Amino acid sequence: MEWTKKRVFYLFLFINALCWSLIQLLRNVISIDALEAISWGELIDFGTNKHPPLSGWLMGGFYNLFGQNDVVAYFLGQACLLIGFIFIYKLAKFFMDDEKAMCASMILSSCYYYTYIIFIDNFNCNFLSMAIWPMIGYNFYKSVKENKVCDWILFGIVSGLGVLAKYQVIFLFFALFLYLLFCDRKQFKQKGMYISIITGLIVILPHILYLINTDFFSFIYMAERTEIGSHNTPKILLQFGRIVFPVKFLLDQILSVTTCIVVYLFLALQAKNITINKNIKKSESIFILLISFAPILAQGCMAAIENNRIMGIWGSIMVAFTGIFLFYFFPVKFNKDTFKYFVKWSYSLMVAWLIGMLIFSQLQVKRTLSYPYQQIMPEFNKIWDIQTKNADFKYVGGHIDYVFQFHVYNNRHPRAILETFGYKNPWINHQDVIESGILVVGKSEEDLKSKVKDIVILLPEDYKYKINRYDFEISNIAGRIKKYKFYYTIIPPRKYK
Image (cartoon, one colour):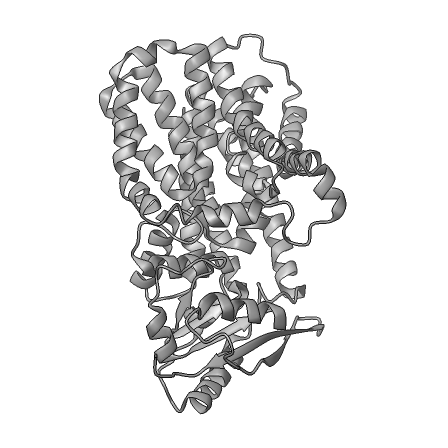
């Protein structure tokens, strides 16, 4: 492989990451998930109210290390995707030549999850998993083929990080277990696999202890999020959810990679050749099929069996091996211009997506894209000072769509009270909340009342508080204005009894 082609590959990945980072500067705030991760990072704990702690450690750490600037979230998210692209390429090299391996990685740059979603979400545990899943796949296959202790240890470390990123990695482990069971059972008799298991357990041990000590507190969120009867679920889904949600999830994954398939077909037309690989090796083909489809199918089957809600976006970390699947099972015969043609198509699609997101960002009037915190925060500081007689603004709680903006963008940085679905919050001192006072925000009056009840559990049952409404507007470049509102109450400081 000519070094110039490999340089073209790495240059594309760098430009792709840089452009997608810079275009997100058009937003006025980073995403709710990224803001939440900043709050998690400040807990300095081995768990959160929703997910394992790794995304919080990284986001909180880097955000504070680099001057609390929003651009950190944009670059951190893209750094995760860049790492994922590189390890997809490294894994693909086990099954095909360098040119096709690079294309198997680059083709994902057109995927819905690697374009629109990264603009909307900036950074969260899915981004982290989009880096770690390819690392797990690569280190596992390298360990199995070369059977070196150092490789198995590295696989154990990366696997442990995968668990600390998102519990969903269990579906990838399921696929790898099936591969060993069907194609490489001798590994069960060798020490390497067990060394990796022990290494992985050591990595996640603090988190396991955290879960035990908190009665598996993090799983509360999963149970609430997947409950089919919640979130005003239509009656038809209560009856047919076992079918509707899994089928929709599978269709979402197919649609997400449609652009990848279209790019692949154009590549085949240019090469004037596309065939079904008749020289596939059994173990290779089973491995690629399992890592490409077993996690998606397992997630869908679990939802069907348990009758749970399942979100399409949860598949964003599962489509990473789509390019490897396409280039392995349906090989295109490359000529001297094929790789150059593919790179041109990749740049064209990147530019098209970026222009699309530029237009989208200027025409949208979503509070998740443009939040007027420059107006809201000073006004609420005045409201707080008046109602509390200039007390320290230490706590804010309520609906996550507003809480984290107050925590990050208010110059007093009140501590965000994390959503715990009615369970006692282990990260706050309730007595100090009562003594210091708290701002509680909600989407509606009913939502606000429930948030007050959950957060300030030490208040007397007959405690009276005033519910206020705050209205604000967001306008786009075309002059379209959309009005938003949220409800709030300030519980002033009071002597704890």
